[in-house]
Image 1: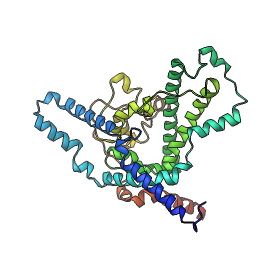
Image 2: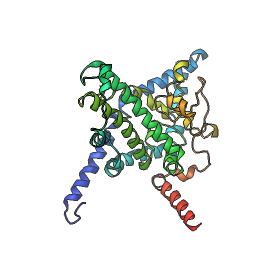
Image 3: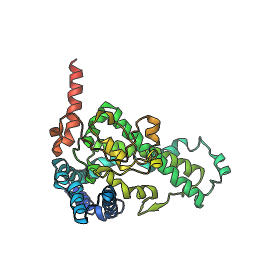
Image 4: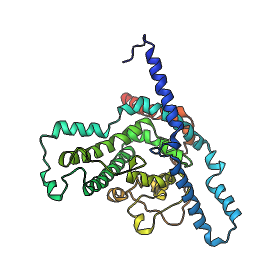
Length: 342
């Protein structure tokens, strides 16, 4: 606990604040950021390709195509919408607030590994794995297996966390913020309440911590996964397309892949205000979890016109930073207070 009579705490918090501001401003230049410039450029180029493909047989002139592209995907109607502008403000504030105040509360992969090692390390043995040739932390085969399994467990963890946020009525009040967006831009991905973020960080930490502990115990504590741009290689590769999840570019995968991977169009259906789409397509990259959980809705190749938001005509209740941060607590307080009076 900081000693308020000692002025050094002022310098510590000032340093943390300035440091997070710099990180936030440098996000487009940081390869581990979701809005790294290469990922944004990739999304833009894919958007152009999707738009061009949809008009290829219409005989439109180039000037007309670019005018239509700007009108449909880059217009002030989308990027100047109050919801989009709020997303940008919320990103800036939360990028500073969350790491300083809330992030220390989230579970970390390494913490889970250490916990399992301390409590189960002497109880479980994995000698049978040596028969599969998984007996070295340095060989290519073992590293490939770990890279693939880490990604599968990570994606499963995100699906579990996302489902908790949808299925638990209390947690839904926090996740509702993300679904209150009335238009989609890449900044909508950051429209997430700190409590929501804690869940989305902690559950995958449990699943990846488990698979990491198994490999560290059975194979080698030195084993790691393959990386690209300082990220898990598969996470990095999906980042080249994932900014389209929160943009009105209707991109689906080819028919066979569309059943097994979550495309940007899948996620846009997830944001639909249509009751038949509520809670669908909760996965992030792999569709297997939605298929097992019976929440998959496969998008058509033809773009669908979607109304976004909560579908309760209550959008004006989510138009300020204070509302995004405090509305969930107000709703829960009213609910608990009403039960206390009952």
